Image (cartoon, rainbow, N blue to C red; front, side):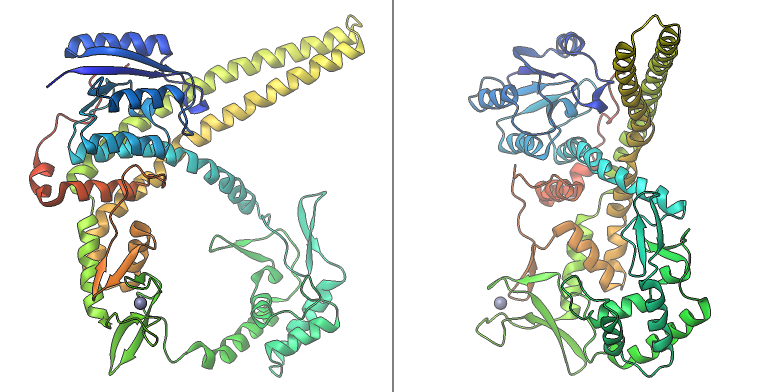
Length: 509
Ligand SMILES: [Zn+2]
């Protein structure tokens, strides 16, 4: 086999890349690595652009040259130098699948061109996705902190207003008494939800467009614990800082009535069946719904009554098929173990670099503070003009702010993406258990996570569509796992059991 490699190095422009070696250092390390491993480097590609969004000119050029057969492998410092977005990551894996790219080498990451190797690689590419996701997670975390302090993080319900000035929720002097009356009215157990809506409408509590509130909205108002001083957030109940409008006994009474009156309607003739909403018809792509016949649950195409000829399928048969699909997707214990090793290593590195980063930023911050106080002294001693003083001060304050943001980013964001990933590893390992258990709803939930809304029912068989190679779809961990399983096919057992040289870096930088 030929041993021609392209050397690829990318500059660190992303915040989280601070710890990565400079380009010069990357190239030097890679060249000596190539010498030791006996790799021939035919060309060197250096990218100055971030890898977070597709469209790096140098990367594209390299991939073209690869297609032309100028080299068979790529040498880079770490997978995250090569791809940090799903499109580029998919392209790399696609080239591996098609055989145009025979080998990837990283001094810091073990890679072998097998299904397990490709899986680990997609996970390494995908980790960046977790990082991007964790930024959204950070926003949520800010809200959670608000919640813990008893501040409601959303729009206040009717009867309250958000006081923008104090950033608190206060009673709406006009509407709060009306809401209270509505509770009292309903507590008499003589009114329907619609009557309450009428009552509120006569007091000009309506929708934005002046219409009567819908029954569901009324039921939501009457059961909202916010009015007794609590609030729900993310499925959890918290003690609010706002003043209650309704006394607890009145609220409890209303809850009882709501429960009683809701009962007959709560028991519909056909309660939702477990697999509804999971599958679509393989012939006409309409949804699949359920129907009970002679004590058995059958699933059928919603168009069945019309002109679709797909047959009915028993729930037991679907359950069996889904169980097989799910257990086939389980993360093999050996792979999970390697991933956990990778994670542990990353965790260590990340917290180390975060500490270095925080320390450095803190030192800079001290310098800025020092400058600020010297500036003030100068101004007070009348050595500096007022205009200059204000200008310099604004500059230093802005610098101070950036540093503070940097510090809080370091201390929060860095470890954050590891959590969901750890959770995912667990979930993927537990698939076999879920598949063998009897909880059909749980099976549906995981199946949806793994396959999205792409499962079809055709001729009584559940069909999962093939994954597209190199598609622009997010390179989720599930997709990577599916691709790995798909490429192993019947060889699963043998390949998984082959002991590998280990995922740990060959040497640490
Ligand atoms: Zn159909």
